[in-house]
Image (cartoon, rainbow, N blue to C red; front, top):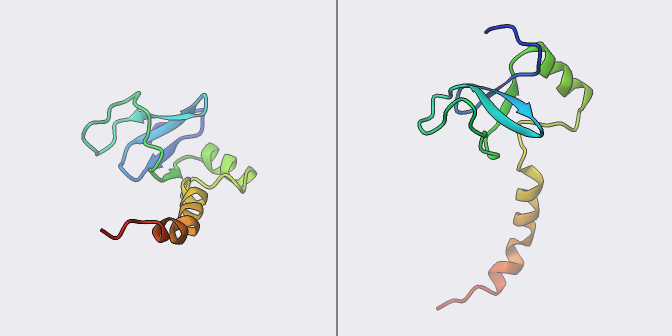
Length: 91
């Protein structure tokens, strides 16, 4: 991997990304059709640190968990599911 002077992350769909103004964008094309360099990474995709700067950033921010960005929303939705199912029409 080429040395970069900013944090770089790999994605579950391949390619490399960096954060720009709070948005992760591809800096290397992923293995997934339909995405190009410069495109925004889907928020559902997992990210993993790919260089030392990204690992340092993650270690300084222990709550910065890139592997489960959707966790809290999912738990909240599952907790509400029994109430929603109780009102689901049966016919």
